[in-house]
Length: 531
Image (cartoon, rainbow, N blue to C red; front, side, top):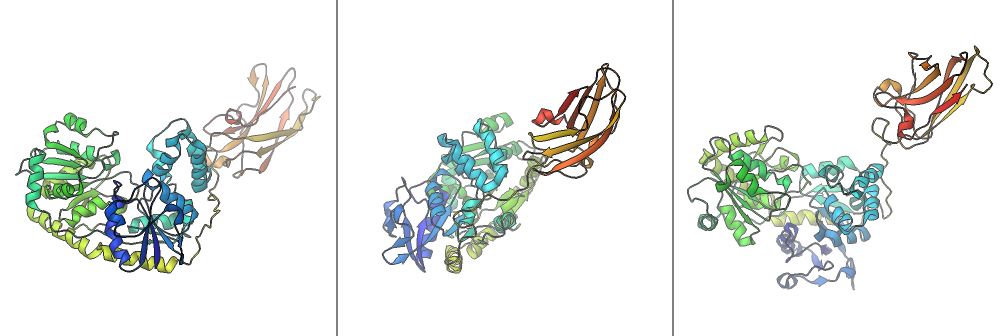
């Protein structure tokens, strides 16, 4: 196999860069591997000394012919060049985060470029993506859209195959798009020596933790989805007064862990180190009795930092959610999400920390899990097996894949309901007292599907009103409800009888939403005539 390895590499501060350094020796033992230098990203001299490095423009080919690109794709700006090249040159892509919406935001709206954001979201998610992009245009940076729309479809369909690190992630992709070739492989994590108690004691002394206390650890970049705030609040529950929390990793400006600790009354028990170099990171793991790796919502990533904790023989508590389902209970207990999360976590902590023999058994099982399932040579073999199988297959989406065919929204959810309304039989003159049959033709000229009247809220009916002397003479008459859903471009015909009253009168006909307003308030039609 002749592979071009495309990924952030040291000195970039990235878990995927660290993962690559662990994986590359085992790939290179079985294949001809060349590194591709990403734009504006240096390659550390010690890395360049071990493997050949080629410029970005040379990817996919050398003097001997074609080379298969092997992409490592994550969810931050360090992967912009990976994404760009993967669109141009199909290969095998390892998807470290199912969600790629954050990197899309970084490289579009983060540079005040709105149209590329709309184009990508539409390409990945059809009209739903286009609609969702509108709120971002006005600075609505909430997380709901970001986590609901993964923004990965076009990229994955442009690859020969996709690798992920959990069966949960593979299942999500298969469910979304059965045409994508996807396979779950183990994330390669070298098995280090067991945690060094002496190094752990030095870390405790350095950051002011009691040497004899029970210590919890939260490792990695601290964002709101890591739920470290929930851990801090759980520490304030009875029975955990002597427990300390060590937070190791850079802290996002979006969270205030020290403020959370003050408000919960546990400020003296929460210790935040910020970013630590790798050797100190391992020592910090040795300083804790139990790791906490909660997460909600999730970008679908398998946490390399969690696997490194397990590799050192430290057990964990994780959220009962998504990719964590792949971890056996023998190494990681699961705390439920929801209103009872903090109480459930506190109860779990009281039980585990009071049973050191169980913690030791879980730690031993954790090391065995990493040794047996996550050895880097096993991961490299799985990568190469997939690459050999997929290297000559075409991408399922080709290079000009169209947006997904997503059914249009209904009148229950859509805010604009364009249409046309024609009425026959109300032509003037219309003699007083004469009864006529009106033919009302209603056309859906908009984007949304109009629901049948029997579907209740959001259903559409035609309402006929006849005003004379300030009173609706047809009040109480049943509405003319759509008998079936009306798709864009379709029309429905209604017939009703109306008698012309004596004196001046005003005939008003308008479609109406059950549970809502007349369609004229949503951009729809109405018809009126003075008699």
